[in-house]
Length: 617
Image 1: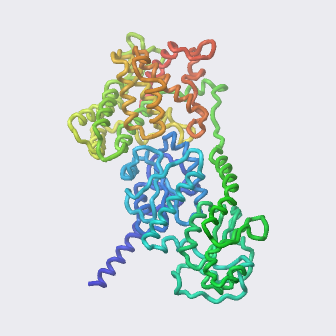
Image 2: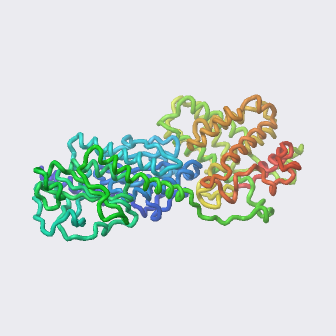
């Protein structure tokens, strides 16, 4: 029976490894959304719903994982992207950590991101080598201006993990990765004859210094390494913490460990041999500088003062590295764009309202953003805000499109427009979901998704989730997209509120604010929007008094965002710069003699622009 169980165990073991979906640096994740990182090019492993568990949470993994949860449309994720690339490049030679990423905007990955409790992005989580569940992930604060800061935070997690394992008596936790030198390359520390060490002393995975031919100590060391540190030790547990501490500076600082086995070991330095007991001088550190003197910068027994002195040597180098990484993070590749100053008529064709874009954006807003907003159930506040937003969609989502030649204020304009057939079907979905909220006091995320999917199927799948963005398509896949479609929809609904004589001027705007406050997962974007609409440009009776103000307030708020983000290379599409809307080539009559936007003329333009909608094909 015992043999049978052993055979069964091994069969299961083999089955797991044959069928496990483990990601690698060249893996292209499943899904439809664009990626912020390039598989096979950036030193970042891509994860998806198929590979996350088998890669990050498998019980016998050899590395810890630092995972970024992002959404490709999120401006702050795009701003963080170059820093994460720099971090990944900096730590790619660390032996027991792997940098990874997963796109939570892709519907394929929503369940994984929910399981990791990711209501806002970007978010970094550290999964130790012992992590076997989503709850084991530890949040690490990210930085938008320093890869070294994040390197330090990641390093601190590794040290903490090591300390916990040492407390458990697991002294071999990292020993297999920080192996010993196979050859002793530093002439002053080597002899021409060396007896073989007793193999029973340490784990057989260690590589001892067994070849003592005198060679260049820098042989085989990366050209980017500035300092080479040798640690001579007899007890691996004593030198290991020192080695791990210096991991922070890898690859600029490389550590080589040499195992010695007694006070008479021929590799001990002369001053050590003069001691009665060589162990008194171990562990011992020798520091060499590339291109510097042949004599060591430091050669001494490791004490409490050794590491601070070594840091003092290294810190100037790290300052240089920080400057280099800053330049790398800010480096941009040129993008060819159409010059709108020279080609205004061609540029006009790039600006229009697309029914497909609005439907695609609202699908993400009502499904993906809702079910990833945190927890397993919708709380009362989120249900209340969702009701407000659905009421706005039911009442003000555009039902018709109008030719620009006919002003929307024309007495017959509301009767001559062409129906937007897909939008009318979408409104039926909104109605069903609103009724669903009224009928249920407790709504789980799965309940919401299942009902939404059923409502879509009942109404001929009105949301073109697989279609490309039209007006909102960026010059590169990482630009525009969802946020463009969302703003377009918000503006179109404020225009509909105006045209349909909305009596409660603040109501449509407050519904938009309610959705943002509860469901917009870009943490920085949400924070700025709420700060703007509650403090800097309050959404209240002082600024919204008439139905014209419904349109005017959102226009001004959007231009406030444009002014803040103008010139932000991480988020600004060069073909669609975040200038004050509308640009001169789109509406020359909207500006006065000083070039400032004139509100009444701009309102007329916005009414025409947001009602002349390109139907979904």
